[in-house]
Image (cartoon, rainbow, N blue to C red):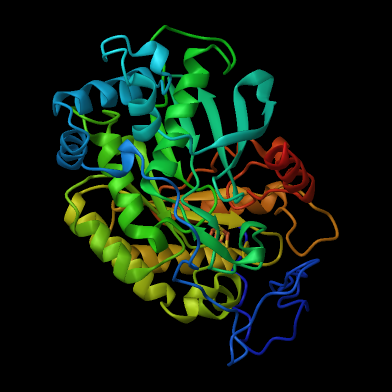
Length: 421
Ligand code: SF4
């Protein structure tokens, strides 16, 4: 068993060996872009959505009661709302031609009013022999977001976006570079799932296994910090799990992740919806995490872990800790030990660690950890009694792995051209 290296002194100079074996401490830094800073020189955090034109109101933005009210306003019986909801949430269609149970007179206008187009497909990329699709969507105001659809044995997962851009300013993340464009509406979040289900039903996701296949798992790990758009994300989750008037999915298959917005984690724990909760920790010490995840300047590692433990206490759902393994930055054995210590200090059996290997990018400070270092990191946690498994990072080949979701300049040019046509 390798010996445990000494912890580096907090004032250890940058990128210098901290032990005789040559372990280095690489510090986070942006590459090719400048992080926006606030008046105190800290990375700027944006919590409020900038004011922009709102997307058109859609059926999925309304509660079941509000849908009925809307029908009455239009002089129609309330049950029409249920009929349209069934077409949209169960048959994944917005096409009036499919809705023959609605009266032909005025059907087009009614459906256009209740199910306005929210996402225009700009591009899709496929990999893993068609088992992974990355969609690039243009929203009504030209903002671009992405979702990634992945087929695994026995389940189909969709990684959804919850904001256009992101205000959390993580130095490794392409999404956060331009800051927060705006919060996505509930219906814009839901529409990503409906469009994915439609693609699956059309046989577009690799080999079709059976007729009623659909998205079974949702991960909020696309663009944006979901808990910074709390109300709309939670309304979307309610629609996902609504068996009567929504998508009828299992809450357990839905993962809400955060970089650590502590008050919102507490609020989430108090909701009566047992979703899976994931904390993107990436460092167990405040010294590194302050730089790696700027929101750590607001809520420290211990506060985030306390809130995560509370989530387990209130829901009984085991928490996931996400940890991207970055070469010589956060992959040191002592950090595995410190992480295990902090998790075990809050009890046993409440948490699972998912180290995420990055794409190798030689010459970058954001390079992947060596395989042997990854294995050692995992071994130390497992030996300390913390269940730890390396996560599958499907979609890496198409730049669709979580935290890397961003529209390229080429995508933007294509979207602009499509908007003008
Ligand atoms: S890693 Fe997540 S929270 Fe951080 S800037 Fe990117 S999208 Fe936002």
